[in-house]
Length: 267
Ligand code: HPA
Image (cartoon, rainbow, N blue to C red):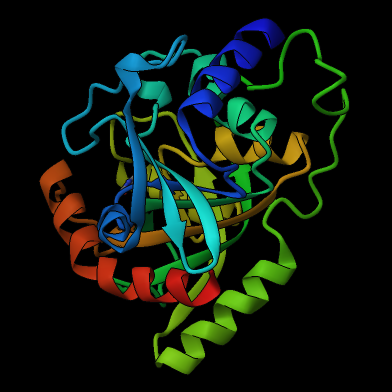
């Protein structure tokens, strides 16, 4: 595994003129952030050795390198979801590569179903912690000791210092941030009413089909992580409604400017 990660990291590094310090996953809700980046280089995923190529509508595959604030950012436009059929190693491969390239901070966004009865569609939830409900663990198998420990601590996956900064910036901008626990599930089905209820009972505030694998792998390597969910639908007893991917994307896009503003503030 390490050989492939090194090959990919040196290929990408050879195409960039500077070292990235921050990576951003432009999930549903952060796509517009691309327009804020002073783009230096764009690399389609299919030109990158060993990189998977995304298939889902609404998730183009492009690595974008540039300046944002006083940072050199490497943005992933398009992520790899477990439900697409990728293995956990494939889903998390780009984050291994980024770490080897020198990235220290990871910013993740996603769209999620709200479970907390105080939440509304369009809310932004800062992820404080997660519950991993994926059936396969990204760290299962031989541990690469040079990347991180066999039994990694998970007591603070989402860096408290970055969360405090996000809350401060949001307050300055007059943007309300929820803060809560994200349950990561496989999908691709949305949940039944009984499943939404179950997820709430076990302590989650929102549910989605991404983020947890990449956060685990980034935490394994000691990266600082901050992640946001845009609440795109509600799985709250009595108000679970029929939902489509289009509605999720629409809700996420409507909230995107607010989340973009918070992120720019942090960077
Ligand atoms: N459930 C799971 N994943 C999701 C949802 C949801 O309700 N909304 C957006 N992603």
